[in-house]
Each structure stands twice: as C-alpha cells, then as structure tokens.
Length: 200
Image (cartoon, rainbow, N blue to C red; front, side, top):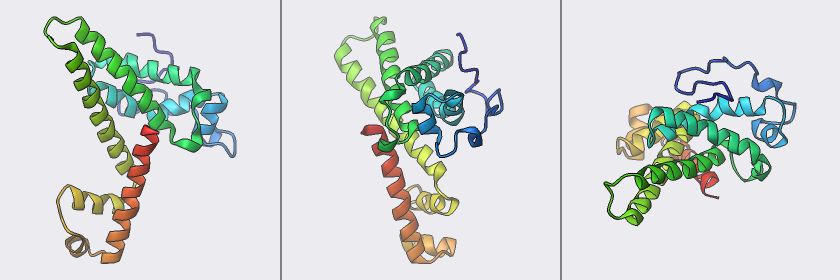
C-alpha cells in the first residue's frame, strides 16, 4: 500500500501526532469548510479527525490490509470530489462514511464474484448492502454517543442498554427526573441528526 496521507489509523494515536492543530485552520472556518475550500492541510486534519472511524467501519467487513487501502481511497476520493460536499447539509464524518459504505460494498461484491461458494449472487448482494448499512448505522450511533456530554451518554445507556425507566434512572443517578428526560430527548435528537446527515 502506498501511504499518501501518512497516518496509521490502526494505532491508538496518529503517527504524525497532529502536526497541524485545529487552531491553524483559518479563522471562521471549521474543518468542514476548510476541506471544501481545499485549504492547505485540510485533508490531513480531516483524516486525523475521522480516519479511525472510517477505518473501523471498513475493518468490520474487510481484512485489515484491504481496510487500510479502502480508508485511504475514501479520503482521496472525498478530497477530489470535495466541491460536492456541502457543510450546511451535514457533518463531514457522515459524508465520508457514505463514501466508505459504497467502497466497502464494491469490495465485498468483488470478492464474492470471485468465489464459487455463492449460488445466488443477487441475494448475496442485497444481503451485503443491508449488512453494511446496518453496521454503518451502528458506527454512526456509537460515534454520536461519544460526542454527547458524559451525563447524557450515561442516561441514554441506562435507558437503552439497561432498560431502566426514567424514574429508575433518576433514582440511580440522583439526577432530577426532568433533567433525565431532557438529557435523553436532546441526546436522541443529536443521534438522529447524526444518522440523517448520513442518509441525506
């Protein structure tokens, strides 16, 4: 593999250790806007922000080496097509995940076409797309959860992973019931927007 962006997304930290900080993006421009403008180092900043997410998504369906290659391809394709991305319509991470989804499906279908173990290719392709979409949604939800404040993430986990009622959560956490409800409502709204960014 030729490393063009120069980041090992499989490690816990980027190799280049943030040579460029977010503060160096031009004032008034976030990573998304800098990316669309083609600002110097915007691709590296985007890779630093979203590279591990995209790689993790690819690695769920592809072998590690192919996942690395596809991750590189996703960012390079996005960079070449950056004028198509509109920051006002959604986050850059969701747009990148959409590109990754298509690349993963193409790779999995290609592998299966070269395999004699599948009798009904049409059914396999439909299954592949559904599986990748389901994994994409799970990854985006997990990413959205990580971005929530600690308290909101905790109450949502208690509600949906531990099946606790709102009063039970309030009692267990010693958080007022009204705050529990508003934290869950706002947190779910942020997760919903995260998914809508992907599917727009």
